[in-house]
Amino acid sequence: MTFATQLLHTGNEIDKTTGASAVPIYQASTFHQEDADHPPQYEYARSGNPTRDALEKTIAALEGGTRGFAFASGMAAISTALLLFSAGDHLIATDDIYGGTFRMLTTVLNRLGIETTFVDVTELDNIRAAIRPNTKGIVLETPSNPLLQITDLAGAAALAKEHGLLTIVDNTFQTPYLQRPLDVGIDVVVHSATKFLGGHSDLVAGLAVTKDTVLGHRLAQLQNSFGAVLGPQDCFLLQRGIKTLKVRMDASCDGAERVARWLSERDDIAKVYYPGLSTHKGHEVHKSQSSRFGAVLSFDAGSAERAKELMKRVELPLVAVSLGGVESILSYPATMSHSGMPQAERHKRGITDGLLRLSVGLEDAEDLIADLEQALDRLK
Ligand SMILES: *Cc1c(COP(=O)(O)O)cnc(C)c1O
Image 1 (cartoon, rainbow, N blue to C red):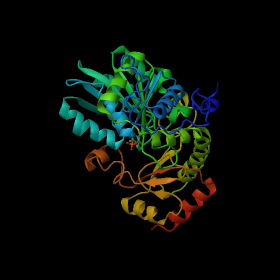
Image 2 (cartoon, protein in one colour):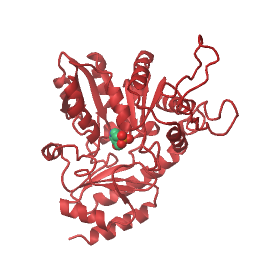
Image 3 (tube, rainbow, N blue to C red):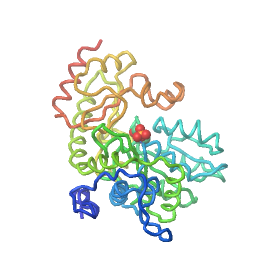
Image 4 (tube, rainbow, N blue to C red):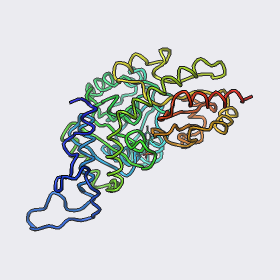
């Protein structure tokens, strides 16, 4: 079955008891037990709820895993997955990492005795060089946020296996439609489902998937222990959003490719970051592991003043934190997604004060380009 069909037919698309065309919102915290000696499939909604169960089975199937988990946010999914590690463990993470994950690693896990080294993971040798006797895991994002840097997933997975390390990949930007990390040997995939999977900028959610059943069992215990589960209403909304993932993603990728090309031809744009540009570092690696280039691009407007002025002048994109919605979203990493990162760290990583990130939605690309053009032409 192709991915397009699988989005709609994963085996849990109808309600098992009524045949309803959607799994309903089982708004219940607890479930009747006929017999105290034989606990039913569902007993308490933190441990399991039928609406969440349907969603978890869907994401597991789409990522090619055996077990899926739904959380109250992307950060809840990532933080819970990071609890697979213990005091004394050392992690290696991409230096172009989501700001919230950076904050979790550097202000919370460090206090619990889990230390992280951030390296430029676009060169696998940098990962190899950072491995210590107590290194236990590698945390990756590709393309990364916000510079769209590309990491060789199969290469990283092979290196990790050689050293007995657990790999976690944040697949938010590509979704399983475009990229399936578990297929190339990654251990845990995490998502901010708030973005493309939900797709409508109307819910906050996170997902995690594993292929290995022992690892799946450990993550299930952590999900239940930490308890940051997604409620049934949001599970329903997310399940609904996922049904249109392919058509939304295809349209947004088409738009992003056109906008990126247009921006890259303008003299007043210092730099465009988009994996689809043949000049983008990692373009070939990305092509080998992802079926399309994605819907997110970043560009340097030249200075903080120009970037902020552009945000005021554009009329179509939502100027906001977040990405992956049906509407285009323009954001300013320095004060939005990466405000958790000290300025010196940001600059060291290349997240300049003129950098803007654009998540291309479903508007016609012509209209988006015309809007960006009127805004840029009026800048000083
Ligand atoms: C938004 C985002 C997160 C965090 O997800 P929330 O749903 O906001 O908690 C993590 N990783 C990436 C790449 C993101 O874009």
